[in-house]
Amino acid sequence: MPAPTAVTEVAESPPPELVTPHRPKTVSRRQARLRSTLTLFLMGLPALVLLFVFSYVPMVGVVLAFKDYRPARGVFGSAWAGLENFKFLFSSGDAWHITFNTVFMNALIIAANLLVSLTLALLLNEVRDRSPRLAKVYQSAVFLPFVFSWVVVSYFVLAFLDADHGLVNHALTGVGMQPIDWYSRSGFWPLILTIVAVWKGVGFWVIAYLAAIIAINPEYYEAASMDGAGRWQQMRRITLPMLVPLIIINLLLSVSHIFHADFGLFFQVTRNSTLLYPTTDVIDTYVYRSLTSLGDVGMSAAAGLYQAFVGFVLVVLANWLVRRRDPQKALF
Image (cartoon, rainbow, N blue to C red; front, side, top):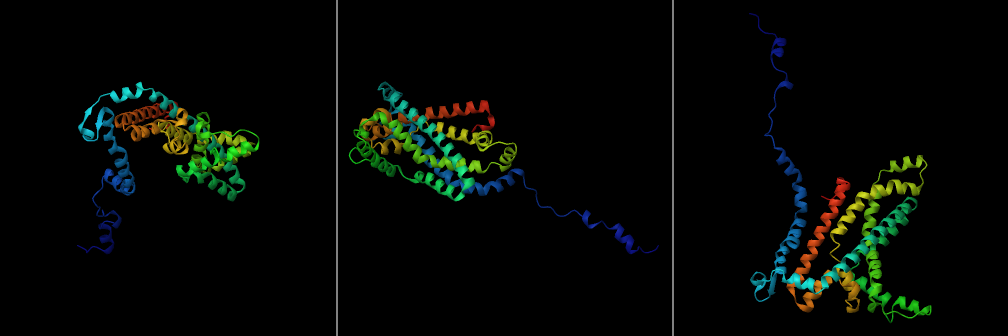
């Protein structure tokens, strides 16, 4: 029998590409997903710890709203009071007064912030197209008050509204009008606090809206320009509709805090003047005053729980209304 040739040996041996390589042990999809998100989880871990310590652990104190708290007995040793703290809060008439002030003032501030921030963002976008350097200067000037503390802002307001040396009263006397004691006239303060809140806080949302405008695909504007649309028509038909999801998120977040008034605004800026309480006394300042002046921990806890519960109901209701109209724009 003839010996096999080299050609026969090569033909009978399997090709190298058909040899099955050694494969490592397969990893489950769940393990792969966990490994890919482990880095992100570790980055967010400090924030989660802070959230747990300062937001969830203090929820144990909710029990104080249903107790006749005595410091000597402690939180869990004090006697149960049931709903007595809530009865006292609502029977005194203070609850309805501070609730109206809180909702009314926050509604004014939310509406003014939305209107002013959108307007400034649109104007800054127009300036950016013509002079980017000048737009950066305006953008920094608008954002600067956001970093000021309320203590600093309160002294700015005092410099304008002080009865004896305020700039506003100097201007009034300069045109022959009588000076006004601003810190004893409560009727002016809804407008004053709205202006101050917008001046300090509008810069954040101006930056947010401007960033959203810059992210819009420029091809939309090019196509609209080719069709003969002017700047005003592009703003109405392209810019504002593209900003609707961000506007809805802004409103939902604002509604979730409509029962949480900014303590610094209503306490520091008004200098805690008792003559201004008819229009500036809100839930947060009432709880603070109940603790510091009256020492009534139970009623303060009841007011805080009432504030948190109604705010939770409002944000769920607002999100439900948005979901009914457009599910993709809802928060959850």
